[in-house]
Image (cartoon, rainbow, N blue to C red; front, side, top):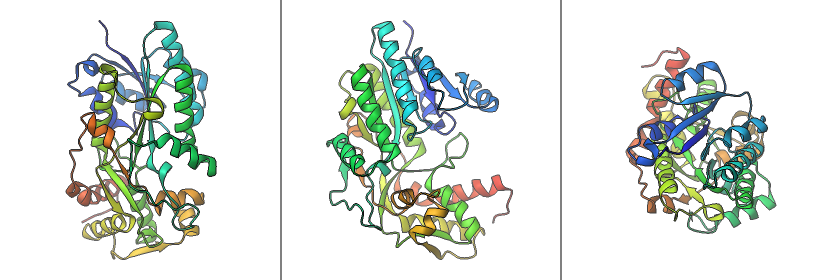
Length: 350
């Protein structure tokens, strides 16, 4: 009997997930056949060397292509962008056609982020008193309430993916990431908070911190993210009791930190490597953070760099996931990130 056919988007940025699936000892995953949607021949060649099939495409806006490709698979892991609602919808509709064609259950796993549940303590636009949130609570209703007040593309995508899945009979699972840290075997993860702060420090001469840096966020190592996907997907394929739909929202975390702690760790590592002259931090106002860190968007500057977003991954742990990386790994990770960025930039370091 042939194994499940899995389609993955974002395999370059989500390489740890692909690595975990390829190295898995779970029978259902070892028997699977993985296809990756990729942009660019170089990325396709590197993935094909790992033994996966690739299909080239140009943009997540190509929704007809996404639906057609999803229709040929039993599982879709959408890791390319949590902010692109139409691509999520297209992939789910393609899976729905697969279900009609085969009469078998199909599954959609969606990478999102905990900025969806972040408060806004600097502007006082939204203050949350009930942290930390357990994913065993009614997180879907909370997302709906927050998005009704202030629409936020990533949160909207989670809601649409869940509701469309329920409408067309596709089981959906939203994995909501906090601050991801660490380096995997695949290319460097430039979308994470630490490398972004390092790049900013290389421009400013100091590591920035937004406001007083007192907001608290969770973190998780990129390799533990891969393991979480591996365990949840295996349980999805072999166990009918994994919650899905409105109950299928999973937090993924292994600890927490303040923004000031993170910036200070990066500053200390930069000084130790000779990349910075001072470990003093550079405070940023929200307007300054909007330009430097928020891509011109004030909402991102606040919820992405100065908020609180405290969660607990209770459901994933009950399914058998347990982070391997420790607080010591988090506290030392900035050095490796500095070295990777300095090496890629051709700049000297100590």
